[in-house]
Image (cartoon, one colour):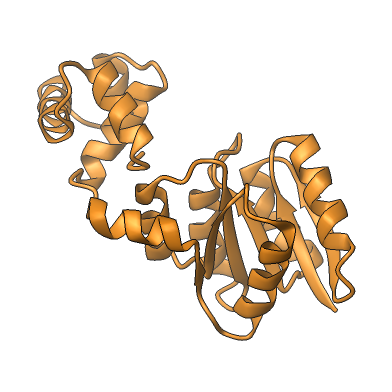
Length: 201
């Protein structure tokens, strides 16, 4: 029996996934969580074979939770599931060690098949997203530019970003300026929107 952890913040979606996957004769839902910062503890407690992670969750994103899982439970298989088929998300998920990446509108049978395939050692990637990611290329943003844009996305002003990241005001302005140039944005708000839409944040 394959033990599965479901991490999805939308209760209705999580319950629907649990119900559909629970119909599979070889899959058991071992645990469910609604926040990214609950994933590591749930995996440690329930020891699933596969963790199914949504990307956008409160507390911690699925991609950040994935990084923590890779460090603490390197043998755990991880399937990343998202509403947003953004090439940047796919690239970041694969770089963080995801075993599979699927969009939520995939049929339940495909998701169950992906769970079985990752346990068999395969990598499973939505083919349309894979093609889009190749066409899009890597994110042009550096880690620090992404940190600054991420803080700006939460509504922090330059002074708050500087204090949060331990940078000077001028350095924050420089990072925002280069991020705007790289995204082709006219201002920081537009840079945040473009980076988010492409899955770079």
